[in-house]
Length: 424
Image 1: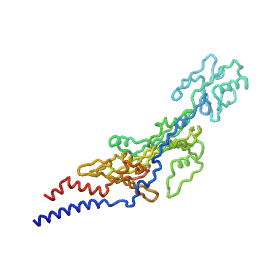
Image 2 (image 1 turned 120 degrees about the vertical axis):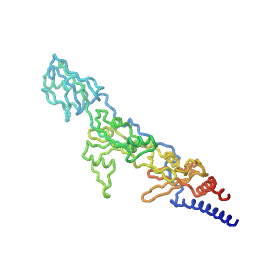
Image 3 (image 1 turned 90 degrees about the vertical axis):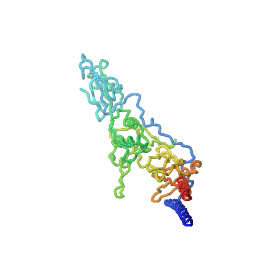
């Protein structure tokens, strides 16, 4: 009988030791935790006054009448000079981007780089800055008044626009997700960043008065997506010799042994996509008008992410670009569930589990140091001051508190019959 009681006492001591050791094995991790209420949330409990830019501000306003410039091709017919009076002028039907133009009459005459056109028997005529009707009157004057080649009032001169000038622009976009990531996200509901962001470059030709930022975006996939930084960068490649410097300045200079690249004569325009209402910079039409050699650059947000670990499934997730999220919303984005028998942050209870995990530690890098922020899910559900705003680079770790480990361990022992076997 004494031997039997001794064995039972040993079993009880062993059970207590297992429970104590289970509680003690969770003593790792940061010890100098900062309460969530002591963390300043700049956007907490204040109305959201941010708004998107009016994208109509990225489009230039075309003039009422087309104004000629270098690169335009005119259709000109001068009876008796460029064509026989018994032969009707040739008709050219526009195609491609010029389909909305009226058919061009006459023979093609390009506007030279110096802004002049060359016609038979007269000196070159400058037409840049003129409308079609003004250019026609100037050509009539050159043949009837300046040279008196044609009789004034009997001339037959027709001037039409045969082809509009175009501007070659390069658009570099890093706001698309690769096909591999998109296919995987359908299967696993995961969000891919970094190497899975697709970078694309487009060399496009924009016709006159459509050579602006809005048309460049429309031609290459539409407005910037959620994977884009909160800005559109326009690099003036055709107006100065500092193209490479401008690009380095806008993208960010690489670090070569601690030496930063020097920028000389940079000409980069940054246009915010979203900001405080009334705080957007004044954007002129000159800022958003694109010329030959200009670059429109949309940089991806591969570094604006947060990480999850502990009882949450490990992963990295991009932060929304247009609004802030708190720790509860971040857990929801990450899936909100633990792995194995760890339970879930949402409070669901499994077999042998009495108390769900409520210990959230947000590890945040501040320069060369690390701050560990303590969030108690029991209070965060009701108290907004407990819900820390997540910043890029934060690591969210879900753990059991020591009392939760003790209660759940005892519950598991009872559930699986451990104690009953001791007293059998």
